[in-house]
Image (cartoon, rainbow, N blue to C red; front, top):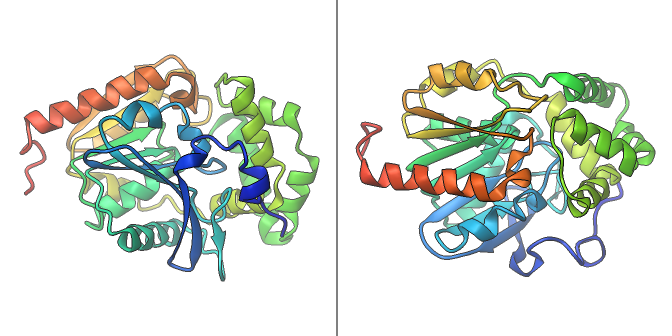
Amino acid sequence: MSGLDFDKDGADWPLRESSRFVRAGGYRWHVQELGAGPPALLVHGAAGATHSWRGLAPLLAPHFHLVAPDLPGHAFTKAEGRLDASLKGHAQALESLLATLNYAPKLVIGHSAGAVILGRLIAEGRLKPDVFVCINGAFFPFEGPAGHILPVMARLMHLNPLAGRLFAWTADRRQVKLLIDGMGSQIDDYGLDLYTRLMTTPSHCSGALDMVANWDLSRIPDDLRRIKVPTLLIVGDNDKAIRPHMADKVAKLLPHAQIKRFPGGHIVHEEDPNGVAEAILAAWAAAASHPSADGQE
């Protein structure tokens, strides 16, 4: 299936100078690595890619050694065999990548579905960060336009493996803008161009839709209860995909949670990277000043 070519489609990719490719867990990963300091991991959400961190990563790089991968089946990360798009499969794949990199992050930041993957690894003790940051974490099903469009397309994936190709062929910049608007976000033209590039690529669409089709959230409440590390829930008050009130439900399940709200939608970290960076740095500083807050070694 046609996919993105890094030499061509990634010629102007954000933070391209920090990109490299790593083989791990049956995938050829596109990974961006930048900055210096304590190790920090950034994991994007379904249908996203490393471009989602283009505003936030440079603000965090003076304080942390950042690693940000494209998830399996997304953007430039390709499966070398069968793609396991389940939550379990994504968690195992990410764990394999971190083991190959010999990288043990102390700060983990996940957007949407990326937060769910990180939450599973933390709950199972396979990641042991000092701080967990969730940006509009998709711990419960999408609502709004995304909640209608993505599940329908995901069901079509089961009936027709060419659904991703069909979606990419029929997508255009206007439709991608409508989808982002439907998530309550407003981004610049460059960001919209990048999302359009992704959403008009069959392999990327298939990877995202396959992820939605295989997403099992039944264990989420138990996962959240087992996360003992300080957790910052960053919420876009205009998020129409994961409704803002869901953060209160998540916070009640987490032993050590704090909610920070911003104007903006589902991709609020792209809309206000400065504000989100400030909140993350404040949460990191607070955890450092109370290292035993989670009650763990």
